[in-house]
Image 1 (tube, rainbow, N blue to C red):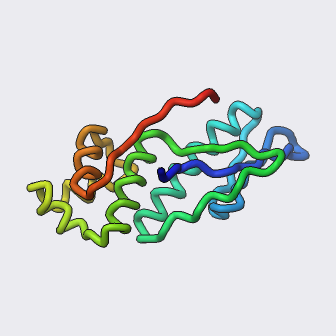
Image 2 (cartoon, rainbow, N blue to C red; image 1 turned 90 degrees about the vertical axis):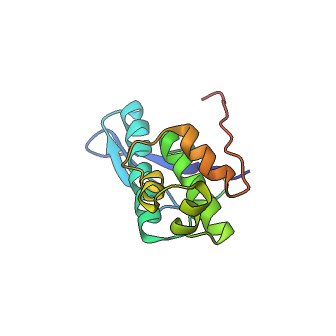
Length: 143
């Protein structure tokens, strides 16, 4: 099962707060005044990094094993669902036009399903994933 979580490091900043980085997603650099704010900022920053990868047609890097001093972070759930659709399309070699034909919808709707900045309904994303022979799975873990 594909997991969309990456090890993120929270380093105390001299001026206070934390600087947040990710070895696997070098574009992810953010900060927060507290650890709680930094964790929230890391999810938001990861959301933007995922959007950039999908917009540029890039493959997501394989997450490295977590190291001491790191935490596993994921982008928001809707972005994870859209990333799962994106990966399923890439692995199946299916274009947006081809997926739209399979679903009987306009290609613009598929573009919106893949756009992390556009609100999409989870059942619609799951339907698109099913059209690619995959199943979207949502889990629950202790934080």
